[in-house]
Length: 271
Image (cartoon, rainbow, N blue to C red):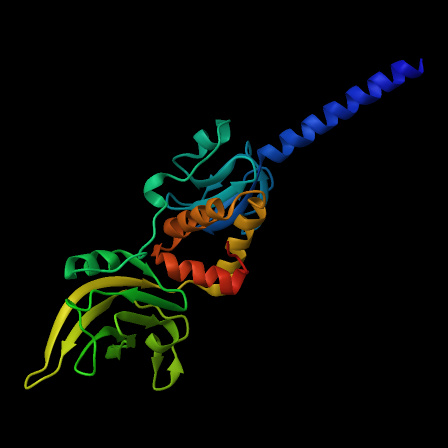
């Protein structure tokens, strides 16, 4: 009789653990939401940190609403109204597409076309970006330098960029300071990178136009922390690729070294 009780007790434990594992695999945690997405069963909105079952019926309040969600075993998924049905029924692991695992930088920019391509699209700026340039093509000194031009409240702002030898610096606090005051929540849709050559004549050459993105650091830290918590058993490179892919999806393409430095300083995340 005791053996029989032990058998059923062990079977029950195995069944419980099996269901617990299955439950864990089916639960996803929200990293970030753009727009509004509601769990139909409860009427509650998805927000950062919300955990929900994969088979929940979701109501997308607009066609552009989307959410980044993650599961420790299954990976991260970019959830939209178009792929919601696929997400609910999928049993496979979700992996970021290769074209989204990319970042700027990690090398010397050799020519004007490379520099233009480096800045194109949504340009994510985290604290300070350092860009190494070919000094033969882009000499930098007291008479030759880069600056950024943008409009703020119908006023043209020109910001000379600091440099050291062959390295150009774009520092967020300096870029967004006007008359010694930081711009609060700047909504600047366009910036122009210019190259100035001073001499008998001043020659200012436009290099490119880009869209600057300045993520809210406190919010970004919460989002990155969720990714790191859900991937705690993964390697440094796997976490870095997932964080980079997420930032690509919701903010823009970051500079690789800038992102690593920001993560090291703000999240104590390093190899």
